[in-house]
Length: 313
Image (cartoon, rainbow, N blue to C red):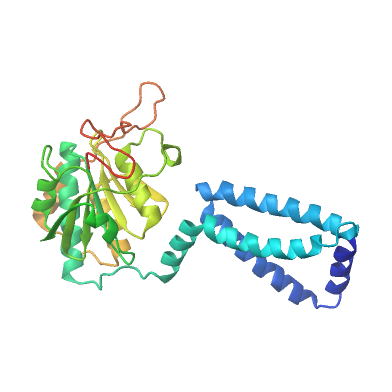
């Protein structure tokens, strides 16, 4: 092993400095991209553990091979590298899938125009109403990565997106208010759709409940944009990727949706301007114990969520 390292450093002297620097920079960028992609997920710990195990194993086997006591270990080392590459693909299959989605996706399946404007308008107005009345809701906007498997587990609607329909779906005790809604294009394709949940320990705030677990769970497995309204506080949140933007006002929600859907805002209606003045976003309530903004752990009395789905919207 020492001889190989010595030979490696000797060979480096044969190359131009800028070539070595460029290659090292490219390697650093690849490693940085991988670390940044898995950071904050369960895959990060698994990656560190697996790479550490491989490094120690290769070092140990390499030293034994240099002693010429076990000549077959050289063959074993070469085979181990191939097995390690296969193990990385198997262990990090979900992360690799998400990376492929991020690379291959465009901004949205929408091409812009009146449909996007009407969709944003319906989402903002319904979210304002739900927030003001503290009716819990979770709405996913499908993009390039399809949600057909989730949709098939819900109740098919295939109805035009409208403010009144969204309000009706999430009205308390409505037959469809449990779990989530999926929007595709200008259609609400399904309601009562179960979304995947992340572990409670992965939430950015321990006071967040099942709806936010479902929103982040779906956001991490797809490129969907998820709007969440908390039943406990009335707070409006927006989930995409690993990010969860909380305590959005209706105007802030509109701005975020326009930015992420690639749609410029149309001239504001005077009646809507009046509604915005009257509808104030609730401030984060203070927890008695920690003083931190809180969403009830169940995120509302109607939530009886189970792993693999959200109950209570």
